[in-house]
Length: 222
Ligand code: AMP
Image (tube, rainbow, N blue to C red; front, side):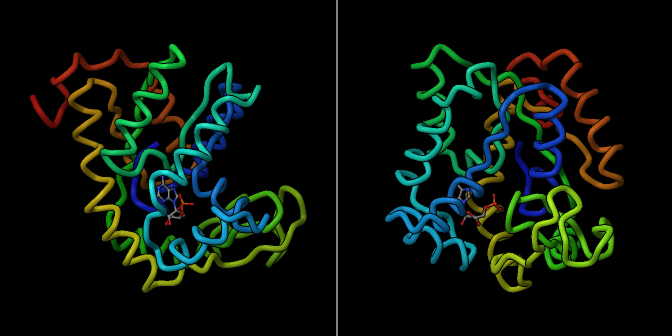
């Protein structure tokens, strides 16, 4: 899943993983878990994450590499938040080739910047299960409590407005080039990320069912 922070990658990846019966692997969750566990990688990563900067590739690749080899990933997986740069995309390609796997499809969720800032500022995340809510667009049934597990909801440090703007800049510079990279490979499906969660999921499923573009003939390059 590609898209700016707050485009809905996590929400949609979670729904898709339930629907398709494949693992949901979110690099941000792996890093936050490492930070919570107090591992060396986690502690170094936390400082960068709180500032909205990318964590060095070798740390992320180590976590992703280990995660891809867990049992629940052997039937397939949805990557959320990784890769985030051309170097990571190349490293992913090499990891997949070595395992005899390939990317089926890259879903790019598009959402305008103003909406992104509004969405991130109102996002509340469950400390226990990682589910996200929004104070206005998707409020929990009981304020401050997760609908799914009853855990406490909090605002991620990197969802504060200044940090969201820094993350958007990092997205534009480092991650957006991947949209063209995967379009060139014929794996890209662009999906409008505005509207109700259920409608966006329907659009993604429709895009996944459509035939792939031949490499180099995506809408952007035709
Ligand atoms: P996310 O939960 O995907 O929004 O990620 C939260 C933060 O974790 C990002 O702002 C980065 O600091 C870090 N992060 C997550 N995924 C990556 C990645 N693939 N490469 C580098 N840093 C990452």
